[in-house]
Image 1 (cartoon, rainbow, N blue to C red):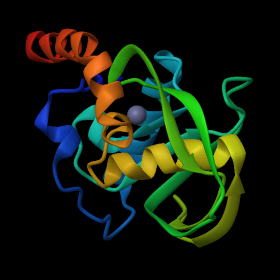
Image 2 (cartoon, rainbow, N blue to C red):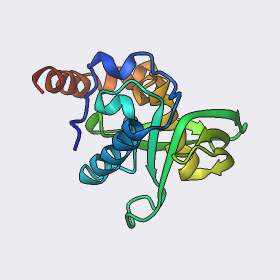
Image 3 (cartoon, helix red, strand yellow):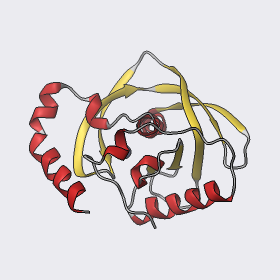
Image 4 (cartoon, rainbow, N blue to C red):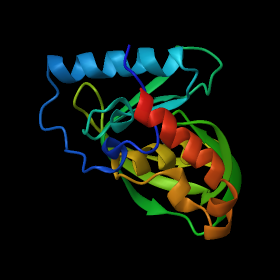
Length: 170
Ligand code: ZN
């Protein structure tokens, strides 16, 4: 299992490299990421959250119901976003115990490569679209806190400082 990287760690905001070849090394990382996601009760995890600066995302598409529906997205991209947006509270394994309202597109188009190397192209809506947007943000070095108003950021600044302290001690 991997250790989760917390807000304040620069690996969360670093550049993430495209995966060039899906080899044993990548498959091992993915397997370990899935394990870590379940262990920490997450429904999505991006590689930079475990300190690996590569464009890899895993999502539990049952959203916590079971462990049989895993979506692995290599080099994911959001190619289109719908006009309609939804505000909903979000959490993140890199921000323990912080839940903040984030505005996101209700529907998106996604392009990625599967773990077996196939090109994927699909549409996602509602919660599924939200989870993908959150994780693709991670591989772009963007965090949920970057998506909220300056007022909200000030409101949670105490919590953010606490998380940063944790990042320094682990
Ligand atoms: Zn996150």
